[in-house]
Length: 496
Length: 130
Image 1 (cartoon, each protein chain N blue to C red):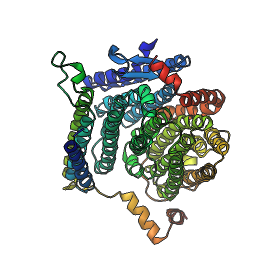
Image 2 (cartoon, rainbow over the protein chains, first blue to last red; image 1 turned 30 degrees about the vertical axis):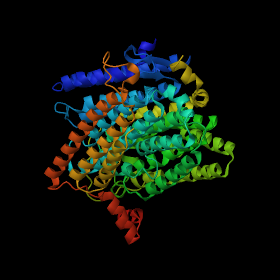
Image 3 (cartoon, each protein chain N blue to C red; image 1 turned 45 degrees about the vertical axis):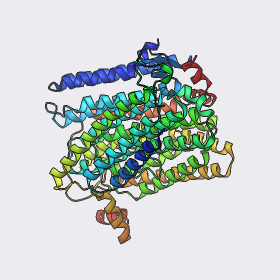
Image 4 (cartoon, each protein chain N blue to C red; image 1 turned 135 degrees about the vertical axis):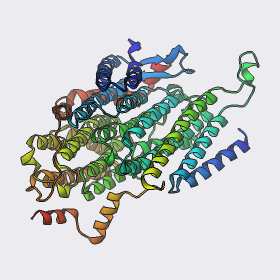
């Protein structure tokens, strides 16, 4: 069944070509995108089931393994694939609904669907890649698509925000490429399984430099403080579905790359302290930024940065419990953060703005919207019994199990960040939903189509499913963490 | 690995970094191109030098490693695409604003002004609501 492995990359790429050819027929474009992403979701689900018996490996083009590129679908990659393709499908439906509600069904931007599918292909390629250069190419594919999406329409604010984003991303790509060059010079291979042995044989100083280059490149993409300033600056101006899918997926691809390289290529936790300090400052600085914001989208961008700190905390612990909780929290966070940005899009249409000082009384005028905001907000803040709480609990337990002074500090930091997240979101709730409506001219509400609300509700339900299925999912992420730490299952699957 | 090649990489990286810190997009673009070429040269320098890697032209043991060259080919294509996109961005920015300087974020400025005046946006908003 290994022929399934390349499909999540190939199908969106072919779909992108087909939608590009159909640029005059928006209805056909929509049908193609929806069916392609549905198929990707199904294939990812099948891969997840199959990967339970060990990683599936495909040598692309039939080239023998250390020479050619390999795609590796192990449990970590397939878990990320399933969640990311579910999220991309929901966001695509939301954006189709938005096009329908705005009445531009006949004249939408013909470039949206192809670009969106290419973005998906880049993300899946990055997840499946078993080769550092292919990982770089995956990053470039998704970044190139994201440049187009973030400047969609070419208005002045989007060009301004897009410029920062493009330049910062280009810089991180150059650092990544330079890191790849140095790794090849030192080891003579880029295949991750082969790198495992060859990197272990290198002197410590050289390994540290290579590790630092990769961490720097992925740290920019994952928005880790102090490399995170670009994110709240550039995300909020893009269209709601674009911001949602960026927030959910793009930073997580960076986190995935960090998890993969730190466990597989550079084990032993030599930079654990550095990661922990970065995690703490990301959490605290991010959430303090969120508290200061008066716009919902910007506030959510800052919470996004802040919660990347939790993921890094788990990676920094480098223990089985820590990695397991980090993977669980990553999956949960993809869904919840995307949902909240979609809800922010709905709020913007209903209230005419996402500025907190202009909104008010939405709980009475739009009760369904209030529910759709309330549930993921509690989930993000980590209120029991939601999955956000379970993920944080796992991290805190892992931190306490580690027992060092730094990890206790991180445990305290996570608790404070969680409380401040609750405070920031409660402020949104109070100002936008609870208080009496603001008098004065409010922009006429735009109609939100049923499809937009349904797809958002589907993601809210998906977030709840994490809570219901937390037990089985945690045991799954536990085996993922054990495999990551053992390293041998991955290496043996690629180089038998 | 030759020292002159490494020196060239260093100069390209240094000049690229300086240009990247400029405010006009055209200079940033030049910086990105220099940085990209610096990285490409670095990858090229990663290969063992030797005879051309053409089957039959030389003994395989003496051939240069062709893989980094193949990778640079990919990287050059990517840099070309990104350069084109940045050029388009700079042109669009020039069309809209008459210059291609990167602007400050308006919301950032607003938050800073609020902090300077020492009033929370909530207090103000609640006042207005009453």
